[in-house]
Image (cartoon, rainbow, N blue to C red):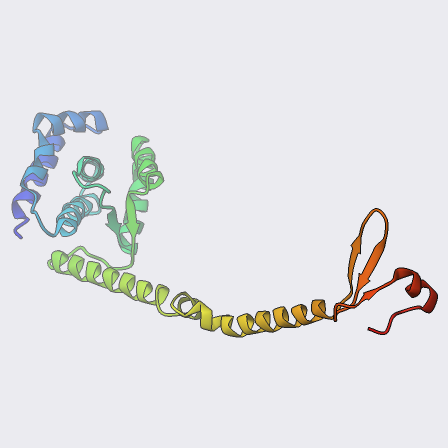
Length: 241
């Protein structure tokens, strides 16, 4: 993937802005719109979108953190912000910043504030509040930036896969979700105990006394079916059934 034409377009945009000796973000947007610079994404590759966007971001960061004067570095920040906001990808690709680049960005903000460019710290704060940056420890600026971006993405994918494998590995809870609940809770034993209880209950009722009442008399039946006179029971006590 040849990104040289895209980087050349960015260089021309920043040069055109620098020629106007302006410092405001409004003037930069005017130059951006005059060149219809959003069309830079029309020629984007169909694959490796992350590498494409990070390469554009890195090119702007290179301008912003260079050894040039403050006015020459300023459009690098403006272009970085506009590229992020205008990118066609959803969700947006974040701007990767290494620790070294983060320190340079901090120094850039301090220098701009000291020179009366209050918009710079306000713009950087807005970018931080919106979560535009992805902070890391790998410095991607160099000749092999595309290769290093690929390696970073591969490393992140490997970590995500490792985390997923650990998260969804077979655990004790997982074994319960795949087990036979009938065996797990010994339902056969419970069923047998229930049947034994039913038989014992039936035997107990068979040997018990049954009481029947009417409006005139009360009879007590023994388990063998013998009818006992209640008057006799009152006189002799409990019958021998």
